[in-house]
Length: 386
Image (cartoon, helix red, strand yellow):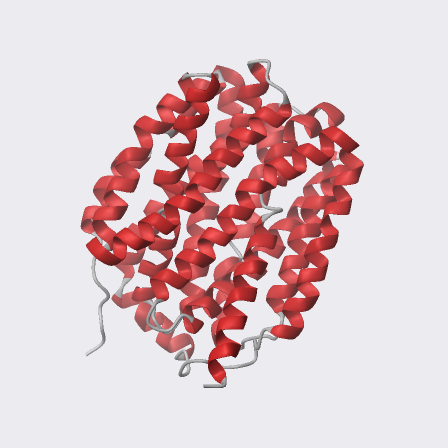
C-alpha cells in the first residue's frame, strides 16, 4: 500500500526527532555546577532553575495536546524542537541569572510544544502495536536524555561554556526536515470528539487518570531531584563534572533499555504487574546508589534508572487507553501536568539539601516508589460510555 511507507517513514522521523529533542533535555542539570560557579549561584537558586524548566515544559503540555488533537497545527512540533535546543544551548552565553531563567523558559516552552503533538501522532501511526510504537518512541527520547549530560559537560569542560551554543545547529537542521516531511495536517483517525467528548472521557475515567498522575508525580520527583542533585553530590565528593554527568547518563540510558524490556513484558504479562515490579525495585536500588561510591554506585543508579524510568511508556499508553480519542491530550497530562507538579518540588527539596545535606534528601525521595508500587495494584480498565 502506498500509505505504509509514508506511515513508517513518518514514524521513524518522529522517533529520530524525539532523540534529537531530548539530547538537550539534561543540559541544565549537567551544567548547573559550572553555571553556579560562573554566576555565584546557591544550591537553592540552581534548583529553582530546574523547577522553572519543569513548570514551563510540563504544565502547558495538555493545552498544546488539546490543540494537536483538534486543530493539528502543521509543524508546530518542529518549532518546539528548535526552541528546546536553543533554550538549552544558550545557557552557556547567558550573562546573568535573569537570562538563565529566560532561556530556561524558552527550553521549557519548546518541550511543551514538541511532546504532546509528536506523541499523539506516534499513537495514531502505530496501528495495533501502540505499546511497541510508544515504547520505541520513548526509548529514543530516553537515549537522547542519557547522552545529553555527557554532551553538555564535555563541550563545556573541553571548549568552555560559550561553545555550548554551537550544539543547537543539529537540532535546527532536524527541525527543518521535520516541518517538511511529516504530514501533520493529516487526520489519521476519526474526529477526536471536541471539548464535550473530552469532558465526558475525563469524567468517566477520572479515578484511573488520577492514579496514573500520582504515579508519574512520584516518578518525576525522583527523576528531577536526581538530575538536579547528583552532579552536586559527586562534586562534593571531589569528583569532576564529567563523572557526575556519567552517572546521569548511565541512569537514563539504562532507563531507555528498561523501557523496551518493560514494553515487551507488558505485552506478555500485562502492564499492571510490570509497573508494580518497576516501582517496588526502584527504592532499594536508588538507596544503594546514593550511599555507595565508585563503580558499584554507578551500577546501582543504572539499575534504578532501568527499573523506574522504564515505566514511562507504560503509563503513557495506559493513559491513552483511557482517552482513546485524545491521544495527544493524554500524553500531555502524563508528561505535562503530573511531571510538572512533581518537578516543582525540586526547588524546595534543593533548599532542604542545602540546609541538611544532599544524601538525606535523596534518601527520603528514593522512598517514594514504595507507595507508588501499591498504587499500581488499583489501576482500572477504561470506562466506556453506554
